[in-house]
Length: 514
Image 1 (cartoon, rainbow, N blue to C red):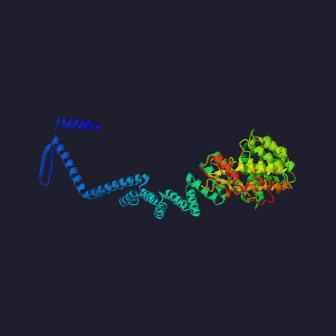
Image 2: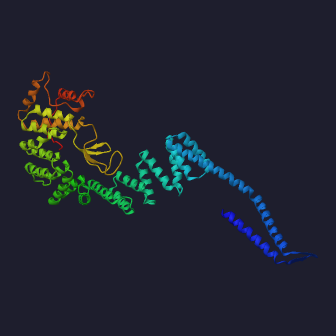
């Protein structure tokens, strides 16, 4: 529409000019080399315009002839580039679909047609990864790392390949390089933090976490939690070599996260060693109110070196009052302390409400109580056998890995602050761990031996009632216990009592982890 309007304006201008010249007649005379030409002004104007147009057309033809080779080459290059990007597109789709053969063929075609196009290197690396050719993948990532435009992409690829082959040194180097060149790059910052933590460089990890916080990569709350975890890990590493620094680190961690159990336990113990009992008690009580934990109880009851079993029992009762209503850990703490103090009535009163649906620890404590109070090895045997199928107690769990103690990073994934205090994610009522079975054997035998002079006769009494000729001990080791998993739970439990036919040496100093 605009072109039509412009064309009409041009025609109107020409018509107006021609009319204007026609209304003003005149003569144009040209004399040159004896020649003389006379014509009207209108004709001269038309002739001039015609000559100009002819010259323009002639120039355009000549210019086109001269530029024709370049135009033909450019056309071929454009078609080649279009074919290259088409191959690149097919390769990326094939890589995403998991077709390594098509991806590699498309990558080779795209590289032949496009040359040094950065995306061809990425496609080549992806195709090599799909084919399992780590060498080719790393070569492509090295080429990308050498190119300024794709350097960070290449470094990330090299970091991932180093992780796949479990080369922690190379992975850390690539992550540190990427984080140094691009401090705001989230993956590089997190990878560098994880690798420093995995290598035990807690001070370096703390410094990097501070930099990440300033860069805005980590939000305030998560950075605060991570800092507390790293401070705790550093304090644990230095508690023997540099106790002063370790105490400061642990206390700082507690200030950031008062309910972080390992930080509270370590801070409480180290403050107790320096005589700051009130401060240590406050830290442990605060953590206990939020998360009643056996390590907190152990540290709290043993803050004062001169305390006897009765004193520790009183502190255990204090913890039971501070614990959330109905929490089992408070009662278990009192039971453990009461057994140590030989206050069997208190122990029985504290554990009575836990034995309706007992956990493994409750069963083992009940077995110890029966053997220690009455010397009833038969009942002790029954309770220890019940521990085989009792519910699990909470443990430190991270990515399916169960640990007896807290660790700052997961041994499975390397994730920081991965461990949680919870019941392990296994089927309830499953067999207890072998070392817990051994604890049951040791506790029952040794407790009976410690509290009954005639324990041999008592232990032998149940054996006399058995139809077997050999004397019956309390329990068989877990390694010899055979359970038919295809049978119902009730039948299997019954077999446990029949399979306990191995004699066990009593331990000198039995202890139950409560």
